[in-house]
Amino acid sequence: MSFMQALRRRWQQADTLVCVGLDPEPAKFPAAFAADADAVFAFNRDIVDATAQYACAFKPQIAHFAALRAEDALTRLIAHIHANHPDVPVILDSKRGDIGSTAQHYVGEAFERYRADAVTVNPYLGRDSVQPFLDRADRGVVILCRTSNPGAGDLQDLDVGGRPLYQLVAEKVARDWNEHGNCALVVGATWPEQLREVRAIVGDVPFLVPGVGAQGGDAGAVVSNAKSADGTGLMISSSRAILYASNGTDYAEAAANAARELRDEINRHR
Amino acid sequence: MSFMQALRRRWQQADTLVCVGLDPEPAKFPAAFAADADAVFAFNRDIVDATAQYACAFKPQIAHFAALRAEDALTRLIAHIHANHPDVPVILDSKRGDIGSTAQHYVGEAFERYRADAVTVNPYLGRDSVQPFLDRADRGVVILCRTSNPGAGDLQDLDVGGRPLYQLVAEKVARDWNEHGNCALVVGATWPEQLREVRAIVGDVPFLVPGVGAQGGDAGAVVSNAKSADGTGLMISSSRAILYASNGTDYAEAAANAARELRDEINRHR
Image (cartoon, rainbow over all chains, first blue to last red; front, side, top):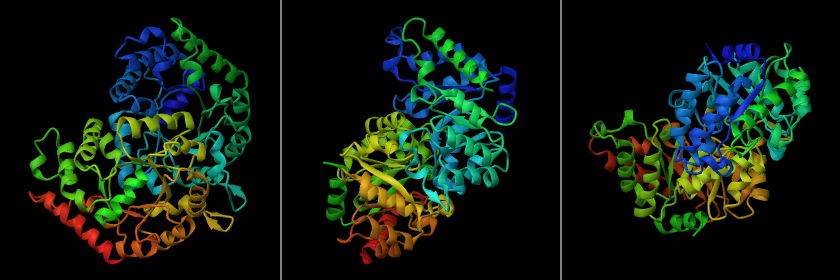
């Protein structure tokens, strides 16, 4: 089953649009992990097991693992998800982008090494830099469009013939790059208006929406502005608000509660 | 000494503008490495030792290591360069880009984990995504401007108020982002006219110039279009044409010859 098939099935069967982001920061881990040499894997595993029932996808962010030399923990974490929660696809959030011959090696990193179902990529280098990802029709390619950070507009809002650059990116992806139907777009929750504009351009191309929770985006506004015609079309990602909901012994239960509450808040607006 | 000081000193003292790219592809290694479990490190080490005298910088490309699970080899390779060729700075070519809180982890990856002197970054997410790198005044921040690949123009050439996007990026970097004087720009050798235009915008901001050799860019045209006022200002990068100059037992000598010839060709045009 392709990433897109798995995602659509998960949306329907589990009735959730929540994407659980896995951004390990050991300084925020519960005290119980202080003496655990394998804490990065163990903490994330516990979060995954506690939140899987509320998740349409898991999204490990690779910088958090790379800075900790924790490639092995990331590999085992994704294998754990595939083995124990096979209905929940995994998006490797790495935002890679390089010339075609090098992009092929990033394809190897994401799909062969880590066995991710989808990967985030940066469009600045143009289509041929994304093509090796696009060619993997069974995997998802989640392309940065309008990001959630304060400086997103520095380039993405520049006026190109009367429209902001991010809308051109959305159009290119929907009309040209999505030949295999395996593209999705990153559009930040912090910009509800832009979500609506991009949805109008791209039809039912799925959005990965970061920025709810710690970054201040409103889940209700995201849903009403950006859901697709059938009330799905969104992977609304929350990381810190779920992972670090509690740093006590109830961390897993608190994470599950936070994920469930986000799911319910989202579903009230669908 | 900061990256920029080290680079300028190296340009002068070694009289070379050649950046040796380290892109390991085991299938292209000489036969002698077929049985070497540590081939990725050993081959790159031999190339480094053979070419260091002709190099103003070394540039390991991280995807090539990541796809091979060779983080340890990359760490040891950079340590080897620092220990044995301390005058040659190391640019980690990773083209990272993410929101500020995540970018901080990529800073940790590049500068603490790998101990690189400089790193390539992607500007699509805007200034706050680059700021954690910019804040490290002693390290170099090499920002994608006009890349060397065929599809570079898909986004980078879009017309923004009468000028292509890459020129806006060049201007932002030179006027706003370069407060610590630690910025450089990626401008591809395959576009001599663009090199000239960007040079006119940014003064003596250094360029990392990929695309000579295997990608077809002409070193002479690069130098005449893009050198700075004092005849330096360039890190002209060649990877495959140096690394894989021979796959026989003379691989190191052939790599040294290729690097020396590129240095000489460049210097004839300075």
